[in-house]
Image (tube, rainbow, N blue to C red; front, top):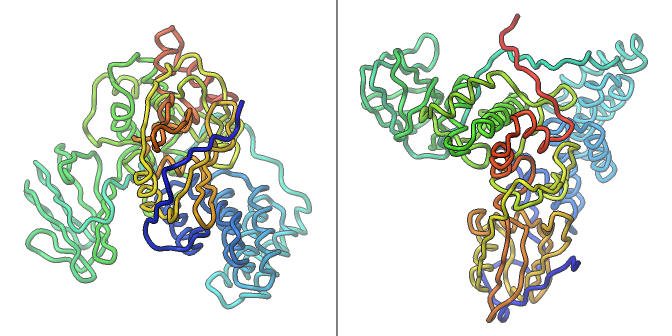
Length: 518
């Protein structure tokens, strides 16, 4: 089987300014950072990996390794791999500020693992370089603590006992339903309130108001507030309305640099009720809906536990899970109720329950899409998903314009090469060949540049026709984790919710959430 497909494009096309070599590393870092802030940590990880792999100056490569180490530790629980990345950064910048940052992060990871003597060495190295920075007092405190603990516990403590329960002290999630908006239209059919703090609350009659950023605060309808952080709450059974979207729970509005972000703070089960009918047709078999409810709940908990230091846990779009607020459906509600509190675990922790529309007959591994492996997100044949065939024809101008729009250099574009075809039939990389250089990008990024609804998957056959690129593909989505059409197929054949989840997430187990502080 050919592992590279070369697509010749008609002539060289100059599109936009820019060098003929790799992307500007500062722009690449900014994009990767933005992805991380939005909660798209897998794409961010892959973007930082590309940054370190390119022929960039040493400081950029070192910074990339530091950021990769942080993502691997916080979002994927891969402390050993994170340690390796941080040590690469230290080797590149042993006495500089990036190396100091790496030493501090390394100390935090080693401290968490109970490797106190090694953590003390890392904090000592950090303080020798950057003791006066904002992390200096923390490093000083932890250094003393690690020295004391190293004497008491010369070896790491044993792992915690095995449990199929995950405890949450707060079962609410924070969903960003609007970002970077100049204004918001808020309302409630019943009484509601606006408060900046416990002592600054204004009760409102049933009404509709426009909120805008104003100076350092906000204007709410006819009155002004000097606060840049307001919370709106219903005072009765009528839900809030935000830009025409009815939401359960409360709404936090944050003003930053003249723009607004709206964050719905909602109980977890109500959030899942708002996700399931948006992600899967409620008319589908009940067992498929139950599987969707479990993975939607698990996905939310996974991100909630890892994004405490961010303003929100999830987006309301396909970048996280599609969330429709209080537009509920009784069939989806029943599935949510039947699985209440059930989540999927791997080694006693919530699993990363990625899913997609259709595998087209074969799922893909996490590693081949985003560069990091998890044992329960592997490629396997999927006889339950229909082919979902599609065809896409693209001109040279369309390809170049799409690449340029997402920051890739398409100047002098000559041809596209799909490379590294894997067992699932998906290509892992796309080579962009230009008149004066070339670049290798992830196929998932290439698909994102074209538009995920345009190029439905990377499981494609490719050829040229009259100077255009023709793609014939199967499936819809990245192919990792549960295939929603496959879940439907299994349910129609009599599979249970447990059997569906076991097929798409091998090695995981069902667990239960326990909420409250008790």
